[in-house]
Length: 88
Image (cartoon, rainbow, N blue to C red; front, side, top):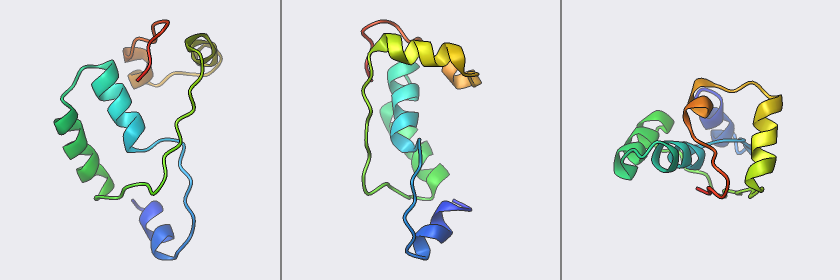
């Protein structure tokens, strides 16, 4: 919000690699948390900001797993099972 909201208020285009959909995918799809609860937390965390457009890049599970091997994982990524055939 400290960067995004002022940029939007200045009519600038904002690109983000992750936003509320990635949180919902990992928390609801990956960890089994309540979709409504995650939505409420997302709303509070973003101050109600919503993207105008969301692009989902779908890659085969093996490609995603290979990328994780070559890049450091945050604690949330380590907690989510990336099983073959799993899609959120």
